[in-house]
Amino acid sequence: MWSFLVEGTDQAVALLVGGTCLVDTLMLKQVCRQFAHLSKKAITHHLDDASPAIRVEALQATIRVAEETCIGDVKAILGRTEDKDASLRHLAVSALTYLVHGDDFEAPAVIDAGIRLLRDGDSTVRQAARSLLCTVARKGDRKVIAALVDIIQSEQACLRQEAIEALPEITIRGDEVAVAAVADCLSDESLAVRREAVATLGDIANYFDSDICELLCSHLTDPDPSFRCALAHASAILARLHPGTITMLISFLQDTHAEVRYRALLALGVVARPPDQHAVDAISACLQDSEQRVCNAARETLEVLSLPPHEAMGSLDRS
Image (tube, rainbow, N blue to C red):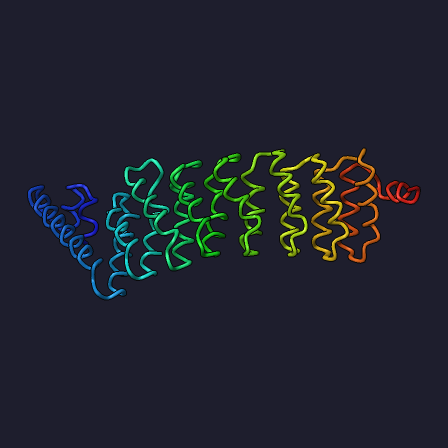
């Protein structure tokens, strides 16, 4: 019953409890407010309980109040981002992601907490922190970008990869600081970091940036086929009509891994043009590839280039 007293009108409360006058109702509402105050005080007290289970219950209660009233104690939830238990930190960050908006006065403090938790020892907390920053911070937020770029210099490969992965959501395409930091990771000792770096460059570098296109081409001999696949995909985004990129993609058509050949064909459909006879001949040769999906990709690429497969094969025979 008490949960309905604060929200009802005086007349509604009178009917609910059987009061005979507004004086009775006002007294009941005052008692209700006192109960609400005591309830909030009890919840706040239990947020610091020694038992993680009790702290979780108290935090969940605080979050429910915030969800239902839109005036919850964000400060209390924010305080749990420093809890020694990872599950509470995760719960608090996840709640702040949808409770706080970029123009709220609490946003700067929430963003600071998100930046701090990018280095948290628990991977689920770090993931929640990245989601929080991408939701609450504004696109191009210099403070967040600087924090991610700093983490890219970390000795831990997992942190470097996660920071690179988060950049496209927060960075405006062409951001020189972010692009330079990610470009340096193309030679990282960790395959996961290298692969994330080349994919991210496709999302944050300027289109047709000749320096970036040349940089991508310089890594065509990377030993890992998944990296070469990512390289072909990024090139299709950034390097339309770039001669060096077309040459690199043509070389990928001789790759020993079918997936690399397949990705290179898709990319050539974007960056090449029919007047490039060398590219047309290389694509046409793939019509006889041992892998059917590569043959199909070659056929589709020739169609994209407006060159029917039978005509392409005739051109190849003449050469």
